[in-house]
Image (cartoon, rainbow, N blue to C red):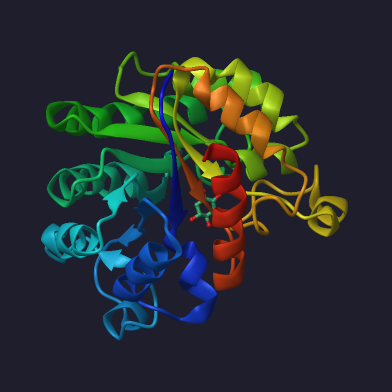
Length: 275
Ligand SMILES: O=C1C[C@@H](O)[C@H](O)[C@@H](O)C1=O
């Protein structure tokens, strides 16, 4: 039986206009064991001014490693969401994220398929996604870094086609970053779907969906940025945790919620289940 950990995706501090460092301290004070920071290319005003939580991959990865260690936390993954169906975006972004993850101390880099180009065919899209994943995985494999591929858009929100994405490259370093909220909003039962891909899951985006959001968006959107507090929406977290416990792999539930209060309530709820 693998261990189930609780982490905070730093998107939780986005609406509070806080920095990476602030977010790490906040997560530690609540009691989280892991965090998932976001990384980006280049330089931009808000992160440099420390009003936004994302970290530039031009920074020293030890900025991340040191800060996380200082607060006794661990990195579950990097949020390095690029667009796998657009190799001109994904390949260099993911290669750099893998190198950055290695030095920062993150075992996984998370990404997804991206928005479909209107002019490509389905078969062409799978070649493009395969190309991006293959090139990135060559860099990941040398460094022991895994790619967590998430359900988010046109193909990956359909279980059979998500399987196809996960099988595009024969690599032990390619696994599923299962997003409970995106899976639900796509119209599927996330508990059954998680069970279906349990052997491929390496990381979870613990995203709950409120009844209001469900009524307004289920079946109409391709994923969502963040959800409500875990335990206040439609997801059955006891079931999710029990499926995670049935696989040998250690798995972190990385909470993806939108506010500081939701981050606190999510932790309390998940902790009461996980113990
Ligand atoms: O997994 C995800 C990562 C988030 O950073 C992003 O906003 C969201 O779309 C998502 O599903």
